[in-house]
Image (tube, rainbow, N blue to C red; front, side, top):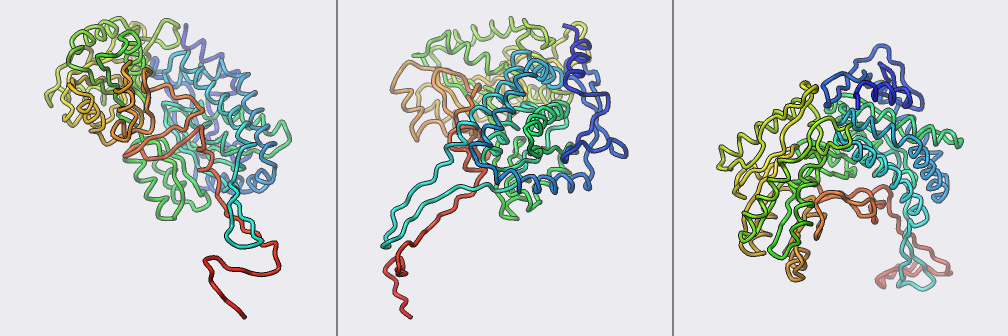
Length: 514
């Protein structure tokens, strides 16, 4: 599939030009007088289009409009807000193919992954519709006569959402579809490496809202990460900042927000491991490990980065896994037979090569890969070979997340030792065990087992469904997005007490007679 032909088709259908405004404050900001960034395709290194970056004046207009829209939006009954959010999902359905291809061109994902990301937005819109009738509060028994107590949940205001390149629109939807149903508006700072996807998504989503006669509820600020991140994280007008990205940047965001006593949802990456025991179904385990180590070229926060194999199956399993790696189709992700596309840019390739070098210097043994992949016709793309390295769990590089298809393989003898190795990293996002043994499974799921926010049995570390709250522990940040009761992060809890009697009794038997 020709990259340039696909570019031309989707740019036209998604209303994108050679120069695009990166600021939306109820209308698209003019492009004159602003710095620009260029979006490049990692597939072939070619420029796609330019995007203007926000000034501080633009940012102030965005916040002002987000506040004004909040005053209108929050007064709409929640079930009606949910219905409007579902209509946003319906509008996204119309552009699933085109927007999915833009995700592939700008982010390097395969076609199925690109469309899958758009499907996540559609699914979370449907999920938000259901939630809009379920913002439940408890009824509480009062110790005072003729008193009734309950809690209710109320919108908190405009929220800030800062996303990474690897999921250029789905993570935005995880936050904003639920927040919108809850009554909040949102300000989005996307990755500069996913700016075109963000602009196209904003056009589709706000067009749906405006078509129903409501003011825009989604706002956009494209700009330099550190600059816009500082504006947002220090801004008291944004009571919540949801940040997806690196641990160092997440710590800076958290510190800024904490200083003003705001809220954060932090998803700061993972260093995910899969344990394969002698009781595992080998076919299932091989598929689970290989796919999640290779999907998105290892650029998922839930990518399997460590493989912990029992010593009795180590050699056989590793040989079979290497055979899979040798046959993986690498190349243009727009081609259906390709399973692994490029890394996002040349800096990512350098990080990959440096990690491979460090791993060997620290005692690791290269089993497969460890170098660039040469793809005919795409010499300027950012392709690498998927890599397997035998490693010691105490190696420093093994405890570090490298956003690339590098899998560190280690041996274990007992399930207790496997979990000790598993938990011996600073991150705590996702985890997996492959076994048909009930005792091994339950130990893995006990308080002595996986210390991650996500635990999987006989399925891989990646591929989380939107119905479950997504997030992790330790340096992953502790936040939760998407399903379950994650909606509570976007609302404020209020305890209500009503006295319907003619006296004023006090709690705890306190007397105050006047």
